[in-house]
Length: 427
Ligand code: GDP
Ligand code: IMO
Ligand code: MG
Image 1: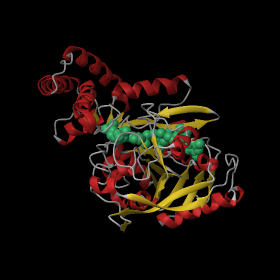
Image 2 (image 1 turned 90 degrees about the vertical axis):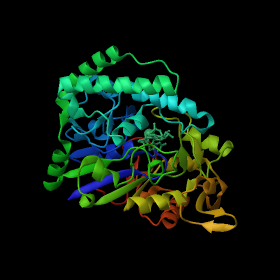
Image 3 (image 1 turned 45 degrees about the horizontal axis):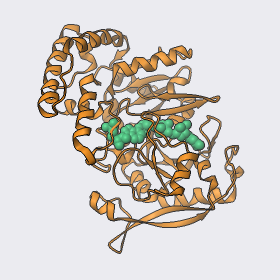
Image 4 (image 1 turned 60 degrees about the vertical axis):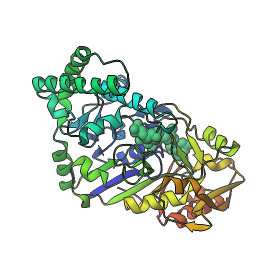
């Protein structure tokens, strides 16, 4: 069995798309199991940049089958926008399959996302406004509409009409918003249902079949562990389970099916949206990381908050994911600093904390305890082996391993496919 999950160890945007694309050259199948088009996964091939949101990052590798599993929420409009861009570039999109159990994001979910964020004022989460939270709300309230409903046009129209009515009640009565046009939504989404139908399959059977046949199957995480609904910085989280356990439910396989768990980990920390961030730098150092790392959202274009490496976060992430190896990303970005800091613990009321706290007030009161590492002050984007790296960069990698307790198996020194140093093969 050659299965590996790729998950984000921090708050998302760690470089999952790049590593999935890199590993996909040896993968027969790439599977998404949660989230939706709130994700923005960048793949750079020969200088050309692709931003994938809903479609798995394996699509750029000829021959790889790409699965959008039952735990993903599907925005059909977004799906076809992505297909259009890929088709225009001559990329084969015939190997994409969508689960018949996946829930669908409708325009009223996006409107509810926007209105609920606005109503929160200063307390807003800073969502991507893609309707993700409201769609998962409908799913857990057991009133959602699934892709299998799209295969039965009459039932689909009936269900959708009922849901638009119910959503309009909330939009108008709770938020004082304008009702959505039921007829227009019905017309547009009836057509989208027709177009999506050929992609719909029982994807659990496909994934299970590939695993049983001993094929290489890669699971592509979206978001990051600290955005997990249960284990993240609640309520400043997303509404799904970006941890490795999310793949079992989100793609319909057994919990013991995944052999390797690769924690995609930035060499520093970023976060987009609100919520606690202990090692955040709001000074010139943070600005320098943002500019060097081009830290602006792939989905929303928002500037990302930046800070030093937070070892408490990544160690916690290793525990909740069962991480077997780290891919240390964007190491090149740190090449401008005389001195680099790594947080190994938090200090709270004079005590040292090494486990990530649940309580946000406690987190706000935590101060980072840093260990300092000398910088390498050189461009490492051309390094292709571990031994090519300057001694200070290798020492930084070892410090990350010591603090997190996880071996660094991959090091990324640039966005390109070739800017990848593999110390131990994953698949
Ligand atoms: P994802 O959501 O985890 O797939 O990550 P994003 O694509 O949102 O953000 C990661 C960004 O970093 C993208 O712009 C990548 O092209 C870029 N990137 C990935 N790895 C590296 C690296 O090692 N060095 C540099 N400089 N950029 C990288
Ligand atoms: P990738 O897959 C970074 C954040 C949002 C917000 C919170 C909730 O590219 O790493 P949502 O729209 O999901 O309800 O927003 O989660 N968020 C992400 N941050 N990367 C992502 O995806 C994210 N997806 C959601 O900014 O704070
Ligand atoms: Mg991203």
